[in-house]
Length: 106
Image 1: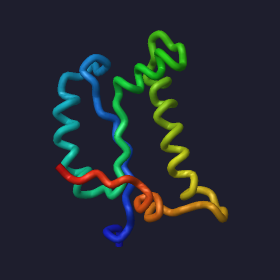
Image 2: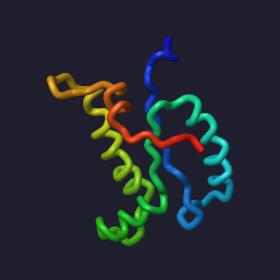
Image 3: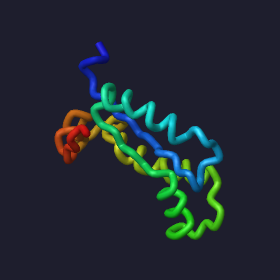
C-alpha cells in the first residue's frame, strides 16, 4: 500500500530568463497542487539559481543542460544515499521528514 509510504519529490522551478518554453511557469503552477497533496517531502530548486551557480561558482560561462543536471544530481544523490546503502547512521524518509523544518500550507 503506497499511501503509507513517504514520497520524496525533487522539483525544478522554471525561470523566465533561462527557459526556452513560454508555458513552463503555467505547468509549474498546475503541478504544485499535486505536490502539496501527494508528496510528504518536497525539495524545490530554482532553475535560474542553478544557472547562476554554474556561472559564478563553477566558472561555466554558458551552462548546458548537462551541467545543470549534474548540479541537480548532487543533492539528490546525497539525500537518498541512506536509502541506497546500509549502515548504522543511515536514516529512512520518516526520520528525514521529522528533522526538516515544516512550512505551513499557504
